[in-house]
Image 1 (cartoon, rainbow, N blue to C red):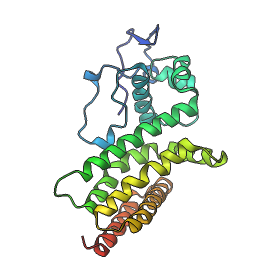
Image 2: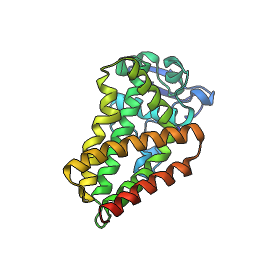
Image 3: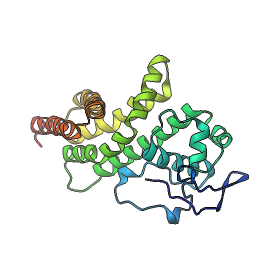
Length: 235
């Protein structure tokens, strides 16, 4: 989701004030016209919010920017300049750089959760196959946004009781994953345990792939896990 550069000299709106666009490509704003956003058929590659309110438009632009350039050590001012707004607008809508990062991860996680739900509703698709397909779909996004996810997770570990990150990283996934395992034939108790195991495995394999760069090995391990339980559960 690379940002779409505007024409040199074109003005863009960032809230009440107008900001003059620049010839510097790193500071050109992402387009906020939905008709000009690049379309994709892969739901896992559409983490941005779909609303047209100012916060959603800024969040979509920030996600596109982070997907292309990463979050890293960039200041809030630098991120704001890159997406054609002011740091004051980002502070107004997200509170801080950490708040913006959390909003980005939330949008991505919600989109991925929606992808899993749609796959589970696909007629004729076995639940275990849905799980395998889901992992393949989201891996690319995870490889791009994984460092930001783990950075926020590490920050939450240093601040015990960080509910928002606990919800994003763990709680919001447990029931959907348990539902997948129940649909595959697991008992309610089995499904609850398998939900945590599969979530831990997914996070662990993502960390493995991010550190080693060996995405194929992570995929092989996930496929082996899924095949094993498909056989155990009779699928």
